[in-house]
Image (cartoon, rainbow, N blue to C red):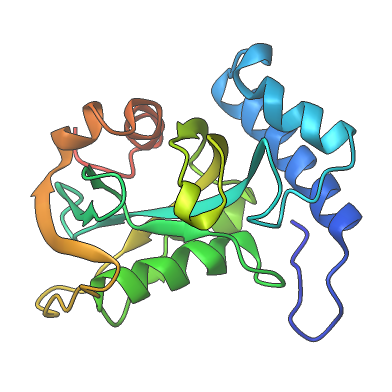
Length: 200
């Protein structure tokens, strides 16, 4: 698994190639249809700077499914901009590796300490889910409607750590039943169940 090291300069072409390889591995592992990531693949082939939030029609984001120790609850945040309960996440920031980016977002938005990436990711070299979804335009930021190519990781939380959500970013954070992901990230939930990372 290619790791973008913070000790070297960031290479957009290497990042594109890395994301393309992840797409291929993930598609084989989880039976992803060829057309699910058409826009992202087209951007990679076209040489777009998918690492930059100023690149349209889309760019890479990362997010985290934060699970409790039992694997029965997931920590969700109420997103200020979108007005929905979602898993913590945000724009990818070079030169982080993708898993580190997801972990950083998880810690920043929930205030939890002691979060760790699930060991399955290190073993497999893959995210648990990759989802491209539309984001509404934000004229005040000069952003047209665009796509977030969200690369998602499973994160484990220690028991008993107090939530301290960043209220500049989110309205709140709550531990919710894992089944809430059925309407938020159904493919990610199916993949976690397939691998036995959560309770049935």
